[in-house]
Length: 221
Image (cartoon, rainbow, N blue to C red; front, side, top):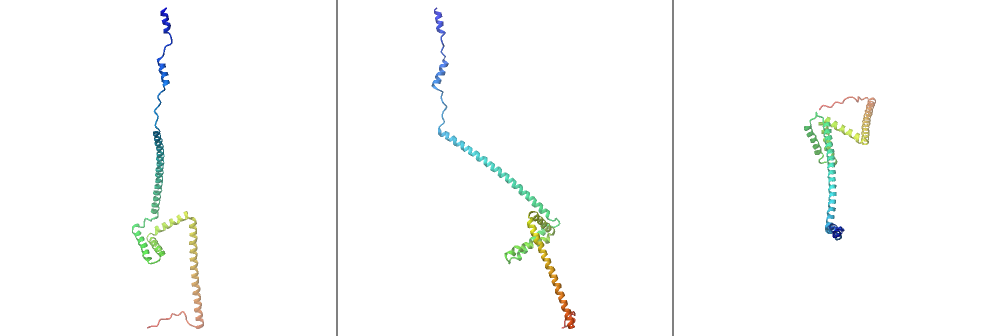
């Protein structure tokens, strides 16, 4: 009987030590994470803001350098392409049969001679005289190259400035016509004067009986 009572008492609800520890921990509460001071937070915010601005500035600077590099490459290519075209054009205009070295010195001497001629003249002649003498020397010592150069300039003007070329051509044609008409008028005037002179001689010879065509010999000393 006593044993049965002991068994009944022992079969009661058992206490769980783990549950009690959990309840105690829940009652006390878990320790919270350490809070960051406000000053440190502001410093971190300022650093992140500065980093973002530096990143943007660095990206913009890289874009600027890339753009500058691209522009430099494009301009360099344009310059070298223009240089090649100019060199090729000058080489094609120069006639290889005309020696460059001595003749170029002669052309330079002609320009200097024009400067010497106009040294005591007005400013207009000081500008025009060396140019005119230089062009004349260029035409004398580089006749074929001179023709090639002015042919090239004429073609360039006709292609790039058609209105100016047309106006210039009209003026040249009018000037040539004026010179031609003036020459024809002068010739006609000379003919009229000669005819009048012949008529006058014949009239004098007819009324006076003199031989006006006879050459008067000089008296001997």
